[in-house]
Amino acid sequence: MQKLKVADHLLSTTYSLVKDPKLLVSVVENIFKSLELAVEAVLVYEKNFKSIEYSGSFESKIEMFRRKIIPKYALENDIVQFIVDLKTLLDEHKASKVEFTKKEKFVISDDDFNLKTLTFDEVRKKYTMAKHYIDEISKIISKYD
Image (cartoon, rainbow, N blue to C red):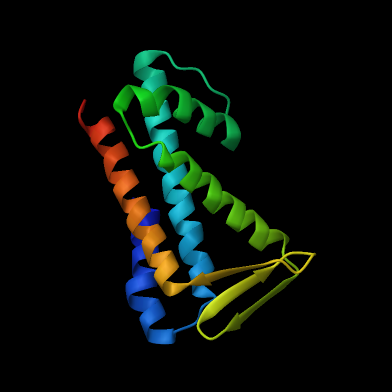
């Protein structure tokens, strides 16, 4: 939850003050990390209480979450694709040699000059979706406390 709060602060306070699109990447990083931690938390919960086994890699966590947790708790299937898309975006950002800002957009270019853009509105939507998904996962874990 802490990472999601950081993302919210960056969006609602910091970005509105400085209007620097580079901050949008930090917001996405915090959104992704919060979702990754939520997935890991529910997997640890299930492993401790329901004997689910998984290895520690991102791919194995997502696969176990998709196969075991989503059907068991009737979560939206879109959550997995959403998390994978965030990870892909961050991986592309990390690998990118060319990035720039233009008209309140953060632009990421790959080696073939294919462009991906981040805008405040897009990142705000990602934040809203992530908050919804994390709330759903939190309900699962807190239901048995």
